[in-house]
Amino acid sequence: MGVDYISYGYAAAVTMGGIVGYVKAGSIPSLGAGLLFGSLLGFGAYQLSTNPSNYYLTLGTSTVLGGIMGMRFLNSGKIMPAGLIAGLSLAMVARLGARAAGLTGTKMQ
Image (cartoon, rainbow, N blue to C red; front, side):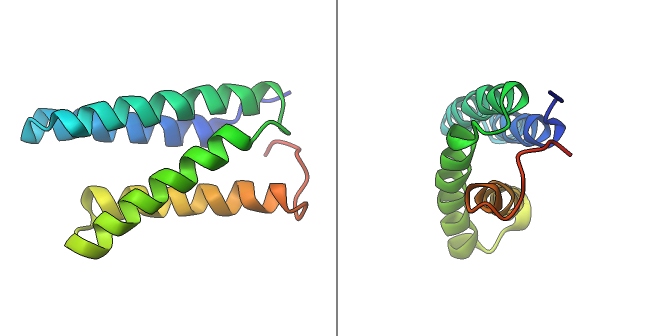
């Protein structure tokens, strides 16, 4: 079984986004959300690395985060950070949604 570097990178990007939001703007909600979602995604990446069929946590978390950040992007029009995280979340939902629909195998890339 291989390591799912894509999922780990996504988890790291979400976590770093929360940390940067806190450092630049002093936003405690950004820090909390970044750490919460990043931790869930990191654990989901671990699950995907040990068993590629265990994608449910990452898919669910990506869907929720994509919805939240997508709405923030639509309301603000700002690419950073809302548009970037919404785009990354959409890509993860598409990647794991295709796996859930059986369009792709569970073999790691």
